[in-house]
Amino acid sequence: MSEVTGTVWRVEFGEISEREQFRVGYINQATYEGYFPISQLTDLIAVLNGIPALGLNVLSIGTGVQARKVATGGQTFVVIEPRSDQFPPQIMRFELSLLSDLVATLTALQSALSDPGDWDDSKPGKITEAMLPPYLGQQALTATIVAVSGVAKGIYIPHGWGQFWRPKLAAAKAGTGKCTLGIAGDSISEGYIASNLDLTSWAGRVATELQSDGADGGSGFHSLSRSTVFAASGARGASIGAAQISAYQANGNYWTISGTWTEYVSSGIGPGSYAARTIVAASYAQRTVRGSTITIYTTSNAGGNAGFTYSIDGGSAVAVADGAGFAVQRTVITGLSSGTHTVRITYNGDGIKALILLGVSAENATGVVVNNFSQYGQYSNTFLNDSGLKPGSWSGGSNYPADLVIYSMGLNDAVANITPDTYSKNIRKYLDGVRDGITGKIANGATDVLFLVQHAGNYDPTNLIYQDYAIRRRGIAETYGCAIVDMWADGRNSWNYWNSLGYWGNGGNPGAQGTDAVHLSDAGMQHVADTLLPYLLAT
Image 1 (cartoon, rainbow, N blue to C red):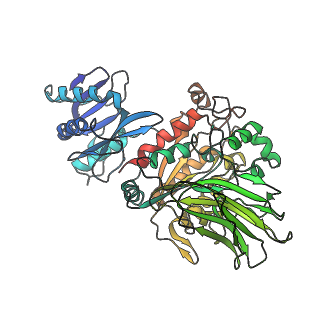
Image 2: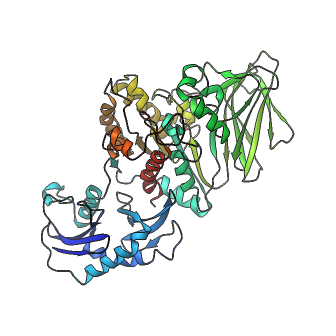
Image 3: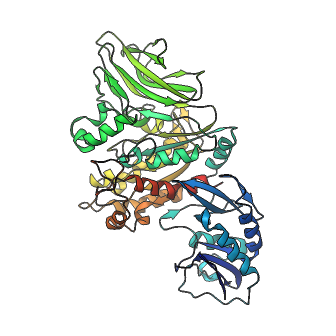
């Protein structure tokens, strides 16, 4: 066995089942960051040498590997990936500042190779022929080594995952197409208790990175659940708290509400599953959005509901009548600039019929759109696809589809002691709508799905059922070809460990480190985004 060390890196060359490989790790760590066949050494060095001159997310392409720079949380990283469509999408990820030392260490290895010795069985990455199906050849062996040894704890990326998302993302980044990410989750995915729901939540940070380099597809969907009508209602108001409500109003995360609005008792329809209602003249809801096309979502009732007016950027009011049938009504406004706009929706009824408003969306013609349908306090039974009105069909389902859906439910189910069987059935009902559609609105399965498992923290101390969901979730992932990113496993299943890293939030001071049982600080949100992004950005 040969070993070469640099200032930061160490590289070892040896045999796995008589096949020559090299592995790369940090000097101060026992584990390894990446595994490669020795035939890729020269290719890898050439690819890495091309990185400094390239911009962000511009590929340096070799024969078998490729690499690029990505920016996350104010830092720049290098991501090394295989050229072929194999898993995982990422072999290695490290800070750009460590690149020159890695290149020097790999170059030194070229002149220091000696007869390889078998690596110690106790070391990570030891794979023997006996562990592999007999039909696997050398190329498959290499992919298996990478898959077993090069993926972080809690990560499951099945072969072929991203086949729909990645081409759409590439087109969006090139300015020739649009791709859509839909997020179905609870309060953590909505962004509580980050300092800014739109920018410093994990979803907001992911959106910022995906939309960088001119790929801004607009601000996406904005639910009425982000308003004081929702946040200050009853027990929910006490749970969210005045400090959060005040902060989110101040930074523009919440709708501006004027007049008298109440929760719609039949919420559980349309995108995001929440609606507010008013029967009071001149009552309005106002939101700042970004995109050249704005869509307003209300419910129609064949004349049984009130109409409304809308205005854009303080312009003339445009009247819209109640539509036909009991349905989700979409009012589409086109021809706007691709920048920021303020949309105001005002009651226009007789004081008896109600206006029921779900939200607005804003999109550009090209780029990446992130629609966050998540809502504080949601359970898995919210996003079902039983009919054309149900939230599932409008939240990544066939009525409002996505190229990639991130599903992040389960914490509230665990606290409510929802059985694992019921939980898995709820996921199945949602995914059936995403992949196959509903009656009258079919889908053809062209949506990738990723399960984001949030850290349980101290949130399920009584029922102790959260881990049972993992078994069902993995089975669904195998059947539907879904990826899994498990932050509970990443966090060592320990509230104290993440507490030591400052990842838990502070309800009295959004964004700051605290001791919340399960909600995240800005630092915690950043960590979730940093964990997700390499898999979302891989091409």
